Image 1 (tube, rainbow over the protein chains, first blue to last red):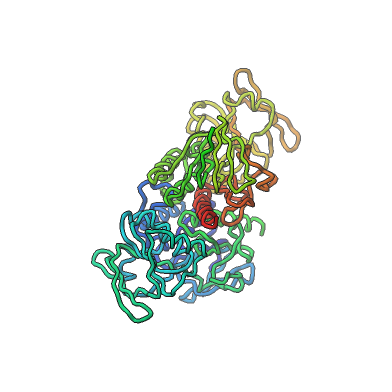
Image 2: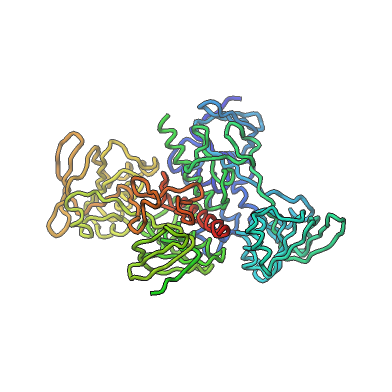
Length: 308
Length: 308
């Protein structure tokens, strides 16, 4: 098959990619956005987004994705569905190989392939995602005012978010598979001192159950004892994983977790290649900063192209 | 007067500050946002915003500011009107002095003081500001119904506002010091297609003259040729300068233009002090990335506080 060339390819159609598409289209750059699934990315999994500025009453993830897509298309964003399986970034002309064997090339590439929460992989988890199962306390804590929620995890995020959840929930039960937390000592101390947080040690969640929403967790101790815990919600905070299978991680100098390091303007170590949104090596992963980085990345791409 | 202490103070109520306020309020942090004028910042001066993702048909600057404010207040963002005139960042407890003599203190500070239009610095400019010289087409365009106005500049703002001005003015002359515009291609195309807009290239304005108001501009070409242009008003749209008068620039290691350098997570060189939005030393100044940085800054503040 022939190789189609564009000045800019945007890999991924979540908030970072769609914002990059909007900016690229408005700048009348020769561009193409490639999305594997549906435009919107992870926000499609988010029932309700209360912290994307501009929507006083919040907005569903689906509606926000639709609005972002419509806006970019109003300015004639070009996009296609396709699954990029590998790429070669060793020359100024970057090559992308798709699952169907087609090849695309570009002068500049904005990687917005995103990330996904590390799942527990237990029954009920998929079924109740957005209906009591959450992977983001920052997003969803206010929904659990005066309720009882469980947090699964033992790292900084889990322990910090457990404390955060007590600002809303009446009771937070942290479930950890070991007998001590991995989180920073100071976070641990605070959690231990918080009367609203209790702990179940040496225990894993084996199933999430309920009717229309989460009602209880099935638990199993390392000693084999089984039990059941009545909860209104469960936060699974055991990390996020980068969507990086198609990326040359060594060339991009990926961090130890597989995310892509960039400078302030989203430039990676490879000239002409930017990374924006959750795939970027950074501490804060939110819809609003992913979108902001998409805009920044296009301006960085324009600057790179104007110096070619 | 007594000093009131907060864990977090947010300085400025533009998109970065309002997003920081939203995130701080949702995180139930003890916070206070201080705004000098009206909430919204520079976007209040923007007639129409087409590139803030989530609004397919665009939104007025006024409406976006109102929506962001309403959203933050829904989560009980605390704010006050006040003019910070100086601050002392030398101790872990940061001190802010207000114009009325009051003092506020905080553990963490997010600087979102923004930027303001850059003046030309030519004779007549100050004298006729508000009498024919304007830095805001949105604010002042309706005064020039059926008249002839000049726009000085060549970037997105200048070209967009030139088009906006044609809704009122009979004729808009854009004066640019180069032979091509810096603005996005789509904005250029629209301006070139607009019969009410004409262009004077390779030319600078050297003086603004008149009696009770602006009557003419003195111009000089890069070839040395001098000329005069009869106009009823002039809009100066040539970029921005940081709002940094209240900041200890040496302590914050400000760049040569007076903007504040930060790391990827918006942290300045002073522990516990973040900078977000247009005041940040960076290449891309857009509403969407200002908002994104406001969110990042609050998470950085939370992390700092949790290690105190």
